[in-house]
Length: 261
Image (tube, rainbow, N blue to C red; front, side):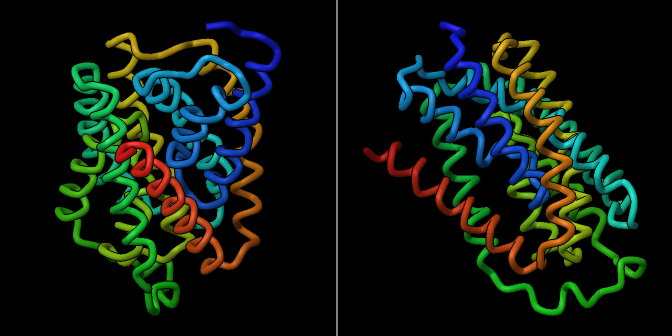
């Protein structure tokens, strides 16, 4: 694959835009960057990535995007350490299993699973959450074993597609575990960071990572993710939920359209 100036600019912009949005709404950004990496390079005349290459680059990039987001949220009491411990441990195991086993799947199989995950997340994001942001941050409780089980399932699926699972984790935290929106956004970034360690390790061990595009995406992520996180603190929580819901729905529709056609 050629690494021209156009290639470098294109990959950097994909990483920057995706990471800014991901920092703002509390996701690792694969839900946005996966389709962007899949479709934008050939649109501008560059060689297309395969699904394995996209998932590999996404996995290693998410590791750094979430780290930048967590750093921006480290103050303010939004990080739920108990939730990070339980879900983080479980999702780390799941994402390694998924990241490693993805090497044995076809590109169409990876895209199909991505479509399923995005559809589930989109449906969940449009379910109303009443009174969730009225809960005081120091009074938040959740079902620990349910959190562990759901994180394991999310980790396996997300590890396969090179995501870290935040686009599924966010609606799960909001709807199932009843975590307030801003705590969900901050905590999901931390859990996603842990998840991306497992997914990246699995992808690297099976040779699915293109390092030069990944480095470009990492640089873009480290710049854009904290900027997005700081912007997200100033935006109404309902607006953040709608932005994420629309992004996930649009991605799901595009992926399914390509699979079915």
